[in-house]
Image 1 (tube, chains in turn purple, green):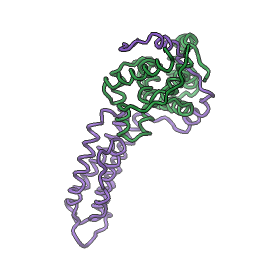
Image 2 (image 1 turned 120 degrees about the vertical axis):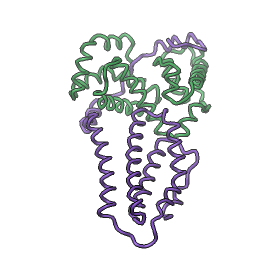
Image 3 (image 1 turned 45 degrees about the vertical axis):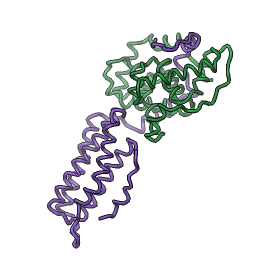
Image 4 (image 1 turned 90 degrees about the vertical axis):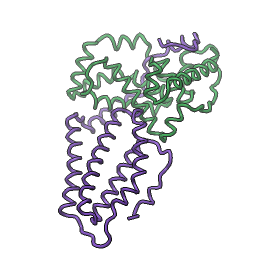
Length: 174
Length: 190
């Protein structure tokens, strides 16, 4: 029995008589069984392979895109450093918020978020690397911006916004 | 009120076949849905009771009971048997309910709600209360106070476990329990 700071003997006696089990109003098994049949069980190695494939796909997409199929956009130089500068405070605030509250998340959810953030971080590194050699590549710049948005969306889905950032001002700014 | 199973029936039902439980568990791990159905039949009452008391809503309790068993089905391979299957399942059930409640609220309310002083709609005062009156009164408790009361006084969790799971301080958990017990004492004329 747990410790009591405020013993109420009659209440504790009633609690002790509560049934430990209560039958649902109707049989839940048929619906449950159907849902299980529709969603085959994933094995841990399958999840690991899926995450790996996602990372490889993202990397391959960025590498392939930047080296082979990218549209060359003539005109003004793509100021990706300006984009970095614009998103830096948002990302710092967002990731800081996530890290300070990560201990409160369900461990499985936290693992999923961390895996996704790691994939995104890897993708950002590849995009920046490609942009370093092709700074005027508009498509790469757009990809960088979309990836920042994805990162912010993931973090915002699991953490509070103490101050709602006006992200729209950065859209299309470049 | 839903059909209740008394303690003796429950204990007899769950304790009489420990080796059968293990056999079913092993078969279910291998994908045997009939074995999983047997485990479901054995534990559904307790899982539903947890969901019902935490949510105070029959429909939500049914949905979350299903969700808990689906999560259990998908995570059976990861159950290493360090604890009893029942203990693992009931803890998983609490996590399913708390996750769902958290998902339904903006993040800031998730943190603040556990500290707030939600306005209480007084329950009718009952004399010579029995456990059915207590069940009804539990449903009328403010959500945060109800959660702590059910986990601590009914399910036997410690305050530090509750605080860790709900992301609050131990003192906050104790304050909610004190509030819940005071309200129940008043409503049930104890």
